Length: 441
Ligand code: GUN
Ligand code: ZN
Image (cartoon, rainbow, N blue to C red; front, side, top):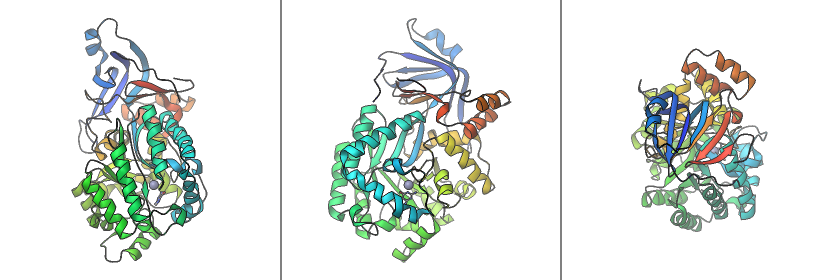
């Protein structure tokens, strides 16, 4: 663990500022950009963000000013779907989702019955997120309560705002990963009571997917979601054609895969559904109407050959969207790399995603999906000061391409296509420096 440099008083950070106030697809005034900007942070919160020329004269004379001129300061990235226990099996070769789960995922997750192993992986995982500029994530643990304890301990030690939960699965998986249905739900409730809203930790009710939960388990998950309405819900839906057919055979009476979840009370605000590839418009309308959000996982969808997310239909139906890595189905921890592939997925469907929209999805879009706007994902006064310093000169190629950009969009687009962990110069958590590239904090 890195040491804590938590500045007590007012701190000022000078650089180019960019943050969002709305979805650029919906508004022409969706972002704030200050070429020579100043971010004021006090007590872990944003106090103000604006032009240096406007804010600097009002600063008390002894205010420390951290000079990040030439770099871009943004709210930390929010990854709305990721599996920490899959860190050690990222980039495993398999012919699609279901063989990948059986051959690599389940045996790897088995090891998380051991809390010490879980703690070691959780520490590496969170440090990797920090290196990539991700400050909040919605995280799957394993079926073992020990994996959740280890994760929240590690997140709390770093001061990070994280949502995580014990995976619920009680059928169609190896015995060693299956819950006792009632005891599993009781374990989830105990974890909610212990961890939900303890400091910055938040609980996510996590049925793995409809295929590995009995109807009783989905019902118990829905009851928890109703009893604790400010917890999160996270699961997978309509990722892969074979999976969709499997769920259809298990729940023949449901109108659709998504409908299985709706029938069990799992479609609501603060529910984040990964993938959403093989939905129809009735499903999309239900997501938009209930306030459930989609987590788009392009590196995973391409890697596992699952399919291409349909932006045009999602936007037409008004779905709330966010972006996610889905490690270890996804192939990178970096949301910049993920934007690169998101853009290509959109292109294959005839849509164009601007860099501004992709950066929105990775910040305020994620916060809105979690109903955490006003808390994280932007630089409005009172937001928690999770922010990143991005270096547009991080590599020779990025430097060269940035120098040839004529507009802000072109420059940001080059960053989204060419950037990765190397572009993250520093990551601050609630005003505390937690990662500095090529150095210790
Ligand atoms: N569906 C059920 N479990 C998983 C998982 O671990 N990863 C992905 N990508 N899809 C799933
Ligand atoms: Zn996943």
